[in-house]
Image 1 (cartoon, rainbow, N blue to C red):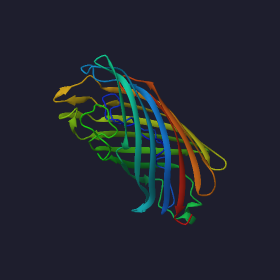
Image 2: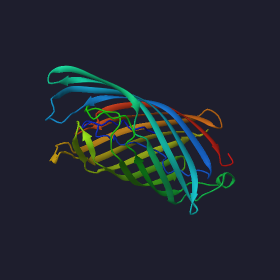
Image 3: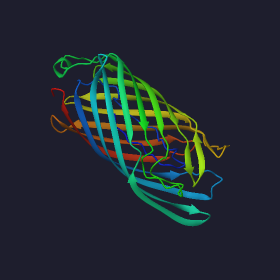
Image 4: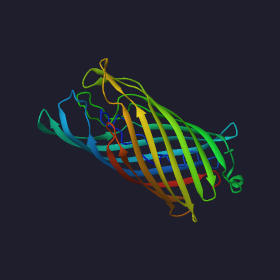
Length: 299
């Protein structure tokens, strides 16, 4: 969880979602453990506005710092995780509006995200001592991610850090261990409430986005692991004041994560992802690094 941050902007270009690649989201963990994550992500890419808007040759860079917390739980003898992610972003965009070169700079809190994951099969709730004898085989789990409209938002601007709407993303995932290799797959759907303050006082609606992702993970000695994955997502057509836009997503992204321990409690993650095939929007590259500290649960 929290392996990859979202490049999340309120614009028809990025669709305010930028589907995440999240390896090891359903990995089993001893009950009562806590994880603190602090990191930085850089993302850069083109902005594709609706053709009815007089915006051309637009691009944006986002520098995002984030902090997250996760705790593992025992829910009906199954391993579960509850977490929160708090991002802070600095936005630097430029482009031409009615043939006039324009820049947009902003900074502030982005929309926070709240996570709940429960493993329904193959990951019993275990204490730290019991976990020492645990060997993963097949895990099946469910998760729910919710983002709240608490990020910085200016109704007068087309491009914002916050989204001014709620989102809900239920997901089902499976993880299969084969020796040092782990194969993962997940299916999800993202649902959005309306933004009633888009471009001053317009109402912007968005259809659900349906996504699938897969990962191949290899674990080295010394608790080092690397993941290579891909995600495909489609849907998300927007409607502004009852007028549907030609902006349905049919996009592929690929990414990697490398994690390695520093000592018993501390570890580092390096991650990146890039667009491979883009029908509309989300044509950006991202690279980041995160520090993780774990404690509790008898560890």
